[in-house]
Image (cartoon, rainbow, N blue to C red; front, side, top):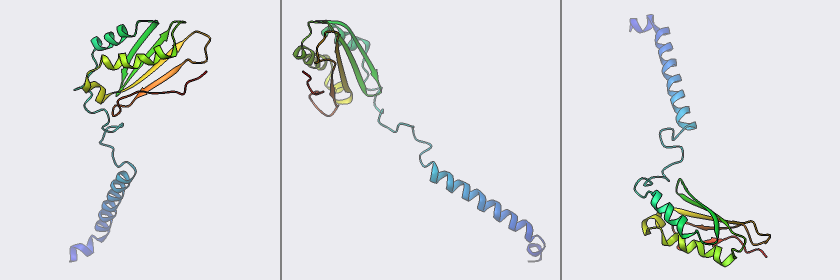
Amino acid sequence: MRFIKKHINLFVFIGVIILIILGVVMAKNLFFPSETTAIYGTRLEGRNKVKIKDETKNKIKEALSENTENVTVRVQGKIIYVVVKGKAELSLDTAKSFSGKILENLTDEEKAFYDIQLLVENDANTNQFPIIGYKQHTKTDFVWTKDRG
């Protein structure tokens, strides 16, 4: 007991340091609760199992080559972006039929994993273009922007 009374200042100092450390740890956990997890969460898990190969991209480009000047296909995250630059004679119905051609060239596993966005542009002076079609991985059909014209 005599030792404690003699070194009371040291025990108070150690107690204050322990309280400060606990306060800092609690504040860190409060303001940064998921620091150890990925920034974007777990939404990209499984992407390595269901990979879009260059061969698949080339098949899509080839399937969409009719009435088009340029087709680009890129995968970013869980979305397949297909951008089609159509010729002047490209009609709206033909442009919308591109969605079926894209789906024909993807496996069921790829359709169930990736979202697909199709952008069709045309230089012709029509009010119908550009149009955008989007298919969510849980859906079976594309949803289109409102028809113009």
